[in-house]
Length: 635
Image 1: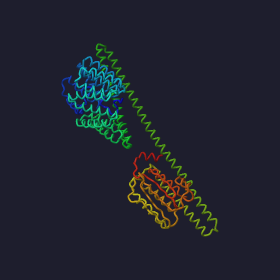
Image 2: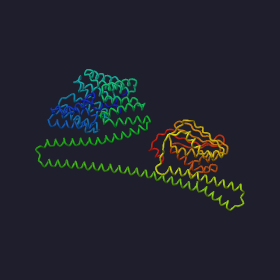
Image 3: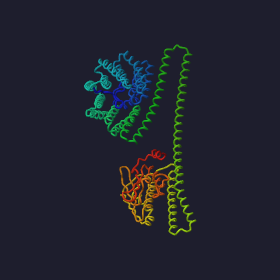
Image 4: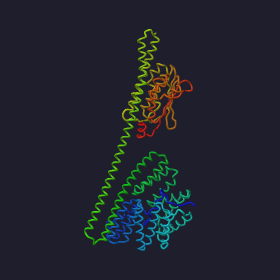
């Protein structure tokens, strides 16, 4: 049989209904009562009012609820107002339960229940059994919750027309997982009859929500949706804050398969929470919002919500520590008062001993707190030092990698061409029998080696400039065609000398968000290679197109092409790419370094006809995240 059960993600109503209804404009009622307190002259009325405020505030702020209840308990004890004192203890128990101090709450509820039964107050006795049931639901003991609700039903038979029974029927539906659909409808109809009789609009709306949640859990979504939507609108119209929270939460869970829509409901819920001071609900609601943000894949929202949830949890923890301190202080005062009442005739020495004991306890608590604070501060300092060490290690690793690359470059790509050039110069010095044609060939080789070394030196300087200090990528919007036109214009003299034509096939309007100087370094390098290895009178073609979220740029030449071994080693530091592409290795390896840091990729391949194609791809509009970019660079 399908079951109705309360879900922690959607059920606010089942916590502690107690002596209050769902409250029309709960915030306004609290403010009205607070304004009236200075004008109350009767002590009993004063106790009743601050008990009422404490009860109304239990969901908004259990800390304030505890303070009001403790004040009510103190005044009631002083004027010997028994019912006021018991009501105050009831509110204290509720506050403890909401803060997760279940054992302490159970002890207080047990004493309060005994007091109400002794006074013959059936209405509050029924409410105490519902308190027990709600607390058992909170700690996950469903069977005990059902037992307490049945006890409330049994006692409430003698007051069937009282409005409290409408709450009993509703609570019973929420607490009992074995109820069938017919049973749920039966109890809710009985609850609604009482609500209609006493014109309790909030009860009727709340029951509609309970039925909607029941259908939603059962999977009857077509029945659930109209109930949830209409009850939410009615709660908004009536300005019932807690029913609005309940309805928005239920709608979010109903639309869990549409996380973006669910997140909107949760955001509306958070607005109500923040504007009306429901501080205790912030953390669980933020947790649900984070769950939906993860489901939607909204990384930015997920990061924002994670930060807010951490802040809310820290605030909640600090609030809990203060709450416990306030309660311990109150409890100590109450115990001391009882001791004083029992020992009014005791000697002065006993009073001094008790006072000294209290002071020692306070000092111990202070010492423990200071020790805890010191440990926490030490942990923070260690964490900060660890982070600094990690950053320094990363910086050292990067510097070591740069040093290794420079050594490799100097050893292979500068030293080898210079040795070759020196060898040819000495050969020319010693061999005077060389023909003019042979000398011219040697001179051309020397010139090419020196030019290649200069090109490598320039590329190395640009790469070193980018590596020194903190690597920064300057993102801006660039027009790819204009960028390539600018790069091509720098080689006009060499192109004219070799009679090579460059065709820019890049369409107008292709834009990218990237670092202009890094892209131009790569563009100039690819054009220089194509020019260097293209025979006279040939054509170089430049193309670009959008491929999904990236832009692909290609430079095609009609040169001798590349071997498989050359392609594999082409972009490695100190790789010359074989004899055909000798001197291109440094600049190509630097080009690869720049493209990777821009979040892209670079590759080379042979054309179907003669020649090769050098291509790279970069994101058209990357998500600019300084931390992720920095981590990429360090890695």
